[in-house]
Each structure stands twice: as C-alpha cells, then as structure tokens.
Length: 238
Image (cartoon, rainbow, N blue to C red; front, side):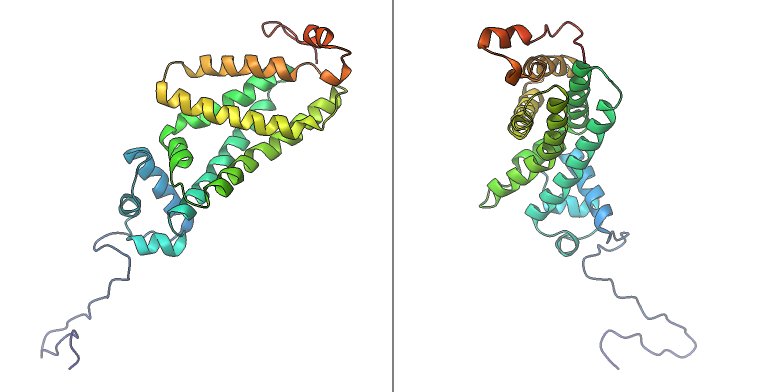
C-alpha cells in the first residue's frame, strides 16, 4: 500500500481524499482568473492602503502568492496591470464627460472633473500607483503611465487648435504638461485635503483655460496675446 492512500477496510466505503492544488488555501475558493485577481488587488488596496503587501492581496483573492506570480507576475507587473486599468477608467470618464458640453471652457472643466472624480473614487489606488516601487524600471514605467493619458489628450488638443486656426504642434507638449500638472496636484490634494473636489477642479480649470483659450500663433505681440485670453469667468465663444 502506498503511503497516503486510503486503506481497504472491509464493509467501509472510503473516498480517496482530493489533493489541494498548489496555491490554494485550505477551505478557500480559488481565484485563478487574471481579471478577478486584479479585482481582489484593488479591494485589498482600498482596505489596507497604498502600502498593501502581496500577502494581503493574495489573502483577499483566497490564493497564495505563487498564484499571483503565475497569473500576473511580481509587484512591478501588478502595478503595471493596475495602472493600465486605472488609465482606461480615467480616459473613458474624460471622453464621456467632454462629450456632454459644446462650450470650450466647460469641456475643459469636464475633462478635469472626470480625472479628479476617478482619483477621488479610490485615493489609495492612485497613491499606490504613484509611489509603489522605485527600481531601475521606474522611469520607463512612469513614462508608460504618462503616455497612456497624454497621447489621447494630445489628439484632442491638436484637433481643438486646428479648429481655432492655431498650430497643432504644441498639442503634445501641452498634453504631457497637463498630465504632469494633474498628477502632482492630485497627490497634493490627497495628502493635504485642503480643498473640495469642486474647488480643486475650478482652480485647475482656471489656469488651463487661460492657456488653452487663445491661439498664440495668431497674435502679433505679447500685449495682443494677453488681450486674447478671455476672462475665465466669462463664457467664451467657440
């Protein structure tokens, strides 16, 4: 008889015990779907904060760490996967919001509001993505995150500048500048909690609209350019 097998006892029907699969905690329902593992990671970050451990994420998913590594990878891979999800949400929310208004300034405000609404919905997630891990891949990963937001925004800005008779070449520079501004304003806002969502959206809208509203290429000098910038409290023409 092999060690560990069920003994043959006359008159007693025994069932061979099922071996537990590697990575599955006893008594738990395994999560072996990548999307569901990422869902569990998001829940764990919301519960435990941006310093959450891989152990806590595995516990939330009812698996052990080897399953996380098998389906997602190490912590850097987890960060990249969650960041991609987060960027999709921000871009989708911004696209929906900007489609609701035909007014130029209001479109800008809707874009900013959509960004801060997504950040506000899960502040721990935003800080986790911004601060987790600082290894040799950090610069590339940071730029990858920026690319996912800035490139779609650059397309929109180029279209707006063309419609205003301005040179679209500035769109990419502006897009990365805007993404950087939003990122650090969001981190400050989360840390200090000095403003409401509506207040921070109003403040960022004001500085952005002052720069976006007037096409500088159509001005002859700085005084003309300054005169072309509308009052942020007025309703500009399309």
